[in-house]
Image (cartoon, rainbow, N blue to C red; front, side, top):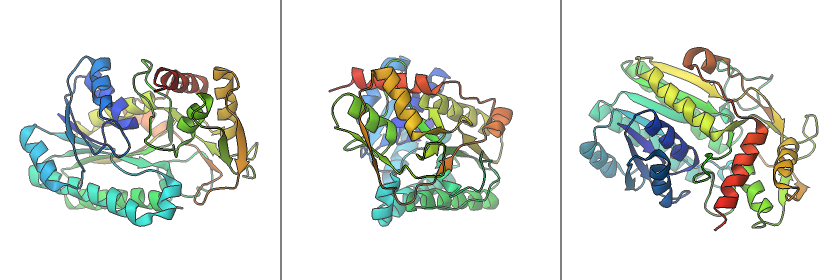
Length: 332
């Protein structure tokens, strides 16, 4: 049985669907700070299977104990965490408190209840300003913002835990930029409040909920001056988690993988592709760069393909189509 922290959120919910499809049982803990309880029903509707849900904070150790006593948890996937770069620069303490203390609570739980498998949601932000592209897993790590630093610190904590106890199996998954939505249109990226990520902002502009998109920076050292990122479909990313868990079940020890496509698209390319899909509904303006953003960031996906048999298959157009489909089906 797999415990998903933040399992009703964007990546957690899509991973829950793929885990259920692969025959795993799923238990979710989520405090609904950036998700909605109705997502549980939608996961069940898509999968045709039941999911157990606990509302609460991962830092609440008594609740974690209760979950373990009531369920036979043998693996944990840790998605819960704040993730907005800009907000982390303004409110670093909020990010350190939430992201790091939730992970420490989980590690303590694993130690006390002999849970051996952990898949951790890390981020490509741990590569800081990489000196060359594509980015390989053995590149030096650093951080340009507090959000990235929390991911970096947690990676270091997990590595120390593995040195102290190498019966643990830990997969650190460094995500590039997840976008898109499930083909059913039932689940997708639906943040509470004003979106921080690019795609949900684009979709809200396309449907008239927001007036225009601000593209932060048009003077980067890239082909059109806008930032270049490796966008990966969330369903591809979710499959990567299932494959990572299967790897851990072979007693893999500690492993680190990039989850990306290996292709960099600029923000402008993304907006233009989305406009092809939705009929030029996305108005945009250029705005000053944001603190902590880098010019360019895209993965080498070779290691994940070689060791996990993982390869992202969705095109940028398919990613945009599925995002637009989700937004149109969930306007309310």
